[in-house]
Image (cartoon, rainbow over all chains, first blue to last red; front, side, top):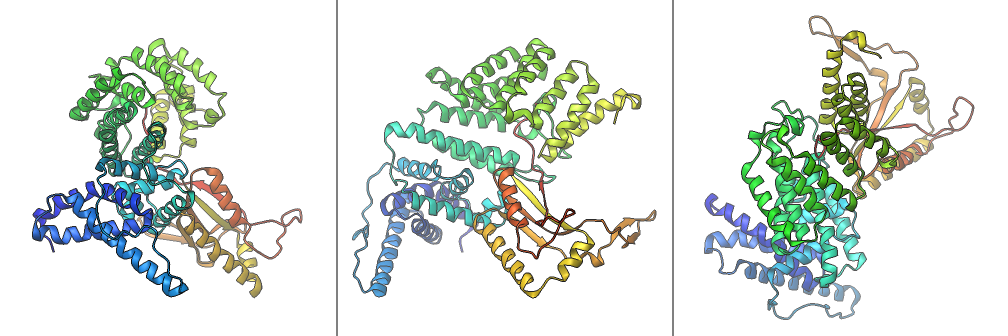
Length: 423
Length: 136
C-alpha cells in the first residue's frame, strides 16, 4: 500500500501522462484494446514502484517503456497461441525485438488519441465515452455514473466504439496539417458536448453536475495548450470558463434555476471570468473569428456587467447578428430575438419570433414558447405570457426548467387575479 | 435523452395473457430475453422491470391521521402497468423504434374493437432531464 502523501500526486501525474503513453502505444501497435490494458498495467506498476523507489527521472519514458514491454509480451503470447491453434507459424506483424522508445514529441501522442476518439465516424455518445475513458482517464464506472446509465451499458458503448475504430480503418497517426484543422473541429465539438452534458444530463431533483463540466474544461485546456494557435480551441476554452464561472449563482439552495438577470453576481467566479476574458482578448485580434469565440464574447459581455441592467445589449445584438451569419442553429435565432427585444423593445422581438415559427426545428420547441412568454410579459400582455409559460412547461424535457416555467406562470397569474384565469 | 416505455393492460388483458398456450408463452419469453439483450448490447439499456399481476394491486391514500387507507376494487377499464423499459437514445424516433419492437412481441391473435388484429400498445414518455444550458 502507498502512503497518502505520495498517493495523490502520483495519481495526478499518471492521469496527465496516460493519454500520452496510450497514444504512443496505440500509434506503434495499432491495437487499441490491448494498448489500453498495457497502459493500465504500466500505471499499476508505477503506483507500486514509485512510492517505494521514488518517481523516475522521466515518468513518461518509464511508463511508455513498461507499456511497450507488456505489449510485446501480449503479442508474443498471442502469436504463440495462434501457432498452437493453427500450427502455422505466424510472425507477429509489429512485435518489436527491443523496447526502444521513439523520439516523438509527447504532445503529438495526446493529439493522435484525441483525433482517434473524436473521429467523425463515431456517433457522439461513443466519441464522448471513448474520449473520457482514453484521454480523460475516467473509469467506466465513473463515466456511467456521470451519464446515469448502468456500468454495463457504458462498457458496451466503449467497446463498440473501439470496435468501430478497428473496423473503420481510422489511421493511428497524426493527420496532415490541412486535415488537422478540420479534425480539430470534431474534437472541439465532442468537448463542447461533454461540457453541455454536465448541465443537461438527467439529474432528478439535484443539480450537482460539475464533474463533467470540470473534465471538459480540463481536456479543452489540454487541447488549447497543444494547439495554441487555433483560435477556436481558445474560443471554446474561454466560452467554458465564462459560462462555468456563473455555476454557483445558477441555482438556489433549494435547487431552483435562477435566470441570468436574477443571479447574485457576487457568486460569480471573478478569477475564472478574468481568465476567460484575457484569453478571449488575446485570441480575437488573431483573426478567423469562429462561433465559439463569438459565443464566448457574448458570455463575456454578460459576465462583465456588474448588474443585469448594465448589460451592453447593443453589443450582444451585434454579436448575435454575426453568429447568425455563421450558424443556422435555430437557438441562435431565438437568442438574437431576445437581444433585439432588449435593444428595440419587446414588439420587435415578438416580430422576429413570428418569423422563426416557420422553422420546423423550432415550431414545436418549448424554447419558442418560453421566449414568447417572456417577451409578452415585457410587453405587458400578462395573460398571453401565462398561457405561453404553461405551453412551454408542457413541452420541456427538463425538470428544473419546467419548475421554473410553472413558477413564472403562477407568479403572473396570481397578479392577474382569479377573475382573469381562463381554463 | 432517456425515455420510459410502458406496457399497460386492463384486467381483461392480464386474464387473457394468463391463458396463453405454453408455446405462445415460450415464444414471448424468448423474445423478451433476446430483446433485452439487444438493448444491452447496443448501449441503450438503462433499466427494465416487469411487475407482478395486478390481482393484489392496491391504491393507497393517507387518511386524515396519516394511516394508510387501501382500496383494491377497480373499474374493469382501469389500465395497470405491466412493466417498463428505460432507454437512453439520441432522439424520440429511436425510442419509437424500440417501442415498436416491443409492441411486435409475439402473441396469439388478439382482435381490436373492429376485429382487426392488434399489437401491444406501448406508451413512450420522456424521462425529465437536468437544467438546460442557459436560461434567459
